[in-house]
Length: 192
Image (cartoon, rainbow, N blue to C red):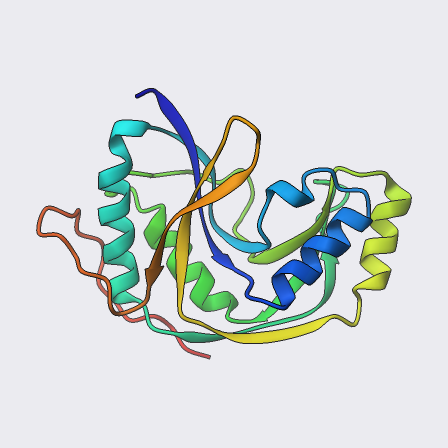
């Protein structure tokens, strides 16, 4: 089967997701149409395609232990000069996102992953474009606001065309955990 590139994220729901995706494209980010608007829990990671059932079982268990929480986006931030990224800030739900991403990447699971930078939940609205366009994205979305109840996350696969496609959704607290699924640390999802 070979390797596949996967990612795990919380989708930004409509109408917010398509609005931010359209704005990202308008700033000149060519990748905008291939990347659904999201908050990353597991960045792009190569895995053996045969490992996907184990990955799905692990994610089902993580989701089964999770609980819905409020998500709120407000204003912009940037990772410049370390990384050419402008983003909308996660101002509510960040602790829950952090809790989730640690369990998704848990060393005892099928997708252990060290991060290049410390985890910082955000919604990218410009990446790798010219500085003037990055500045415009930062300014134009400085008063952006959105909120919704986060009820789960999803597994995505990047196709050969660089487009990310959803493979499966994992709703919180209702996923069936197969008996052979790897066990992760117990604990409750923090609420804020």
